Image (tube, rainbow, N blue to C red; front, side):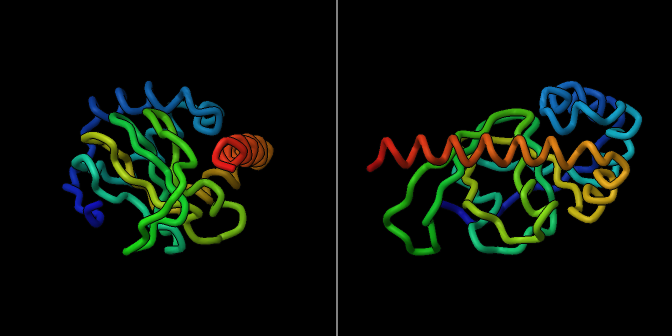
Length: 162
């Protein structure tokens, strides 16, 4: 694993339209209009990561939401800086988000996310995303459904491991 090393790139309007097309598959992002997504994502930056770069680390504060535009990553539990044992909780793909649960509880990252291949990720300040969700009260129902789905998925993975 390589610590979070990313190249920051401003998002041009043409690229932003392509990113929105991918992110609209995400149930939470689909509730926003294209104009709202444009405004929200314009507040962020595009990060280019190489394979094995760490995007977020378990236990660290969440100050940005990440949305995968291109590439895949794995979310692992127990991967401390020198951990030799960990469990893969999820495989992440384009349109997936990282940091969502912190919108509700303000807690730290629940897993470490590591790029499996070169990735392009949009990083948006979490406060900006929280403000956008506040404009859509139904977003909290969607967040709850996503959280429950992820917990069930985690239970399945743990059942396989045990």
